[in-house]
Length: 369
Image 1 (cartoon, rainbow, N blue to C red):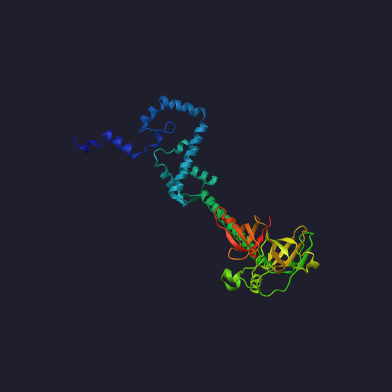
Image 2 (spheres, rainbow, N blue to C red; image 1 turned 45 degrees about the horizontal axis):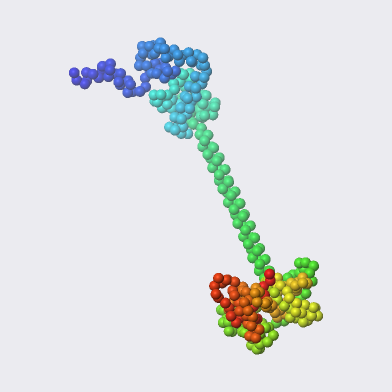
């Protein structure tokens, strides 16, 4: 027999029905989730033991079963409306037809709603959808609550971002103002002022002795470093030497903090501080220093011409204040009083054999401990 003769056979019809997917609603058992093909099959199913057991369970708690089916039906219906149609206005029956295309959907006759109209009215009351009744029937529009939440969250994020930007701008503005204030204060502190000339940090006695001195020349005036022969000439223990050596010595600034110096001004306080030793506490304008007199504690502001370096005994710690090795910390190895020179061991090269020989005594000064 040909294939055309088997098209209307019961077996072929059964296959086509199964392939179609959806069958009559009246022959579907929601409790057992079983779809019967005809009335006879549905009757046989209702008389089966498995169906009877499910009916006994349903009889014990009917509200729980109906509530569960109702929740599943509502969620599935809203999912179809949300993902298939979005927020567009659509006929309720169109959404329902789209929903029941799923073979495993929850049937409405197993829920608390008997009709689609009642279910749509419920969605409108609960705020799930906007319901509009027209001559063509009921139209619904999905209310996307998450969209409103996302919009609100985006606004909050934008507000936080703007607030953070304003805070950062205020911080940057404040830092800029503080930097300008520090720069202005630094500039003002470098200029001599009456406040700097007359101050009393403690109860120590303060004296001031400044002399008019000729214009000095240093490295900043020429823009290049002078040779050691031109800049620093050999001098004898601060008292003896040629006229050219004395002039070169006067024109070079050697004052630094924490140096031990001796006062050579005989007119200051009627010679009270003459030959007394002190420690330089602060230097102003390269040639003026605040000196704390040892054993007295008096703070005196003196010019460089009123001071002379102190040279310690061999083994003492000194600092080179003039010459090509200016700024070097060293230890005195020996002194040659005839040549007025010293032999130094730099502290930066303790492990090496480097020794500075024939360094004029005028080029070194004792460091305060």
